[in-house]
Length: 338
Ligand code: GLY
Image (cartoon, rainbow, N blue to C red; front, side, top):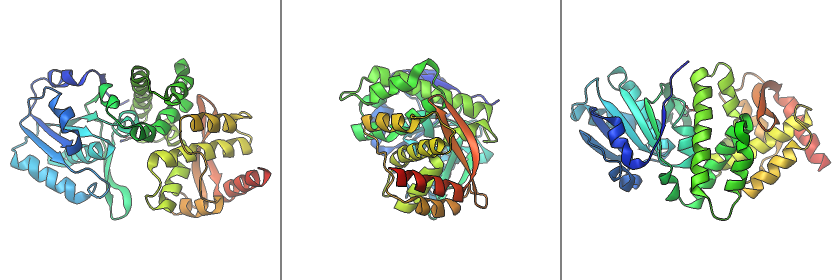
């Protein structure tokens, strides 16, 4: 069991909670205002440009060189502030600098708070291959500050919405799935409720990733919708965002689960309705055969058998190994029925 520490607090308390550390802060230059409000006393501060283009080994080398120039010792604590790209780059750099120093995160997007900054997987891209170089090493403290959500444009909230809903489809303790649909489906977001749901989702993910950090079993559940989503992202060549691809992927997984008799009848229709209410896309633009060819090239595919996480009901998913041929046949059959 790995310890994953999530700290929910206002931004202004982060400095005091970090205490007297040899602190280096690496932040997305777009969130400089947020960094200024954290009351930090740091030895060094470095703004970076965070994008898929800069999420590459050369950036890791330049950040490590900066830490070295600043005189960062093995006792250093590196704080990454930004969205999931920033926390990935910073987490990876800290994991390899001097064979690994301590690090923490302040995720500043919904997607990063519920997913990217929790769980310990941090990596960078190699050529066109995403997260091909990386480590699994937990951040020592991940700060969940609800007020950062208030400043996000609606588009950014929607970008994290599918991962938030996904978490509650896996674990619906407290009826959080219904509450999340209600909150994300409103014209005006209630940020207090959204902050509470975000923390709940991050804690579910931290629980699962802490019990199974290296994805030998239970952690695979977090891949709900992702087998299809990775295929969609590959086919769209970055045209479809991760959040939107996950949304379409979850709906496809639900249709497949129902078509194969795993899921409660009506589940796919309910999820489709709920996701639409939250302004998430539900129709995948690619045919089942196209998705299958992309999946066969995916690193997680093993011959023509692929791991799928199938929703059985809200709050219950199962991990199944399915033949790609069988999946395509079921989805084609369902399309013909429509
Ligand atoms: N960095 C995301 C994860 O560990 O799942």
